[in-house]
Amino acid sequence: MISIALVGDRSPTVRAHSRIPVIVDALRESEGLDLDVYWVPTPDAEDPEVLRGFAGIWLVPGSPYRSEAGAVTAARTARTGRIPFLGTCGGFQHAMLDFARDVCGLTSAKHAENGAPPAGDDLIVALSCSLAGHEAAVDLVSGSLVERLLGSSRTVERYHCSYGLSPAYLDLLAAHGMRFTGHDQTGEVRVAELPAHPFYLATLFQPELAGDGGLAHPLIRGFAQAASALTATQHA
Image 1 (cartoon, rainbow, N blue to C red):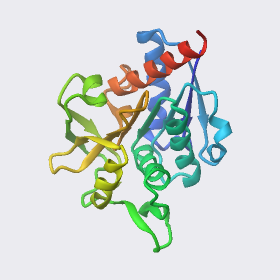
Image 2 (cartoon, one colour; image 1 turned 135 degrees about the vertical axis):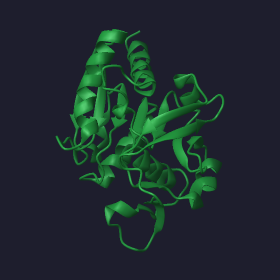
Image 3 (tube, rainbow, N blue to C red; image 1 turned 90 degrees about the horizontal axis):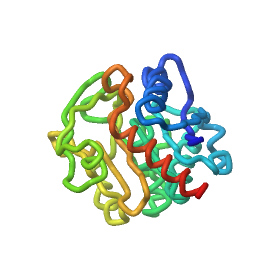
Image 4 (cartoon, rainbow, N blue to C red; image 1 turned 30 degrees about the vertical axis):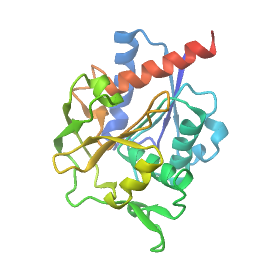
């Protein structure tokens, strides 16, 4: 069994959440993957031990989360434990919070959506134009993980978010190893990855919303395959 943690506060009003079970079934059928998926609420994820033993951690959309600390801990547990990680929409945003705070030393980094006090650094800020309900092109960096998975230098993806990464901190994050591999037509970041990690991919867009869910998006498929590879190694 390939155990995957879906970290997020499951809700019938979040479209991505209703899509995920359909996508998991599609992966089981098309890829023959024996997936064992667990929903982990963000307050539970505050304890990193809750996430130990999973072969993959997917920080799913649905922010503001009930626990910012739990979402950040999920990203950190995957990053430091070298567990395959996929962060989408809010998952992207909180993965960047973890990296800024824990790797870059920007301990005051904050997310504008989470009602943090004014003191601190606005790492995640309101987008100049909300992407909620929009579809847009993303240009991909040659040789990146996201480009290899998609087999193309450009993709068109769907969004449901209003917050993104402040350009003021791109150089700092990049200097510490974060690679920004997808950008919109104005140059704003839409994809981030860690090349030294077995599989660490964060997207501001939502691959969960591609098509009707009956065929898993290549990024989700790649994440599941990475979790399968880790499981095979653990049981070798």
